[in-house]
Length: 252
Ligand SMILES: Nc1nc2c(c(=O)[nH]1)N[C@H]1C(S)=C(S)[C@@H](COP(=O)(O)O)O[C@H]1N2
Ligand SMILES: [Mo]
Image 1 (cartoon, rainbow, N blue to C red):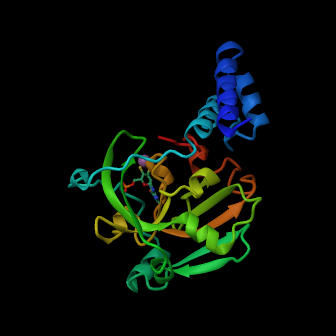
Image 2 (image 1 turned 120 degrees about the vertical axis):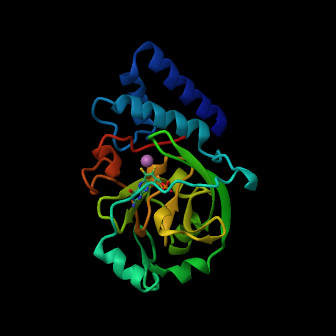
């Protein structure tokens, strides 16, 4: 069977089971195909599973919408973050010259990259929208290097299924599956609208995940790690978001 017709079969199977026998049957089917999100337990779990499984089957290769330069927002909104902690202030005081991105976990060659290491990688740009779950959005140009390139360079091991990423803000960490981690629009972002990435927007380093809601685009990234299981991180729900009631998978 071709990939497409297999996909169609699973998708219509999911839709049919959701209609006839309810969400529980759909999640059983999703589980059989390895399509359950890490926060699939609990009262919203079956719904989360259906959303994630259906999205992954239908839109794995789709691109987030890109906009013409004329649509870049004149007044992008920097959603306020907590006041900078001492570690961040120390980096800021030296112009972020000693900021490092640790890349570890299921990779052949763990690395510690400086911002200039990252700047020496291929530079890409995209004009995409940040959409907050609270109902506002803005469009900006994001300049950076695709996460996929960094993962290839460190030799991502085949058993890795997720990338977990951490901010210098201790409460902010997220994870994405490989469909998003290797997606061409998922950027380690160093610039915005032709300048350096401002601190308010996550500078010096932010992971932009434009196919998901704003909260997956974590600011002030210091570490990314590859893993086959999210159980060992936090409460095992995949990221900080489901720990406070937001879905792990926030596709838009
Ligand atoms: N480290 C960190 N990253 C973060 C946040 C935060 O408070 N701290 N807020 C998130 C939320 S809820 C949204 S909607 C977006 C907002 O991005 P913006 O400031 O560029 O508008 O950043 C996300 N990334
Ligand atoms: Mo948000």
